[in-house]
Image (tube, rainbow, N blue to C red; front, side):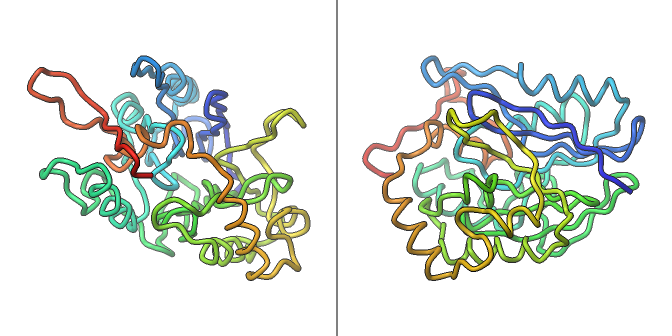
Length: 286
């Protein structure tokens, strides 16, 4: 059964979110939602996420899952808003606990913050199966960008998060806490073991001025043309390239607010005694 996929681009963060469904009137999963956030004012909005909600309602879909490929460093998740509007369970890979451990210390989070992943409705293990109505899903553990990245294989489509980008852009950075270039290389090779015709959906696209944003390629296209990990590129060559490149990159614009929210399954930190929610800025830490 072919997987129906509706992409939604957030131009500000160059992020693609997806509604994945078996048929109209059937069941759906929502992947990598985005909460609008203005870093200048600290204000949030659900305008972008509302587009996903409207699509789900227009197609009369029952949302089974709201999935995160990882705790994103470039946008805030809108998963709680989507769950409140159309239901579904928020899921992420079980290694999120490692990321929570790292950033609890970085941000000196409140003692009540638990690093057991209990903020999410379900923690997925590598190889675990799940269903989206008539579609069968399987979890593929793809760390390297972070220790917790998961790819979601649903029917004939795989959603790879920040593991791979479009072939002309390459691969994700590996210099965040817990990241590792050699691990990412092995994760990309695991994805390329899928059949060549498997559709591969990007979480981000960074085309610059070369072309419009794109969200879809295939396993075969990645094997033949990915500028970083195409067939014939060795692990040693990749690690050298990736580490040299990462050393030149700035931190993502929204990493500090995003991580604090995303390790909480998209929830904000608890309000302080004046009723206001605050996000922390660690100085000279990252």
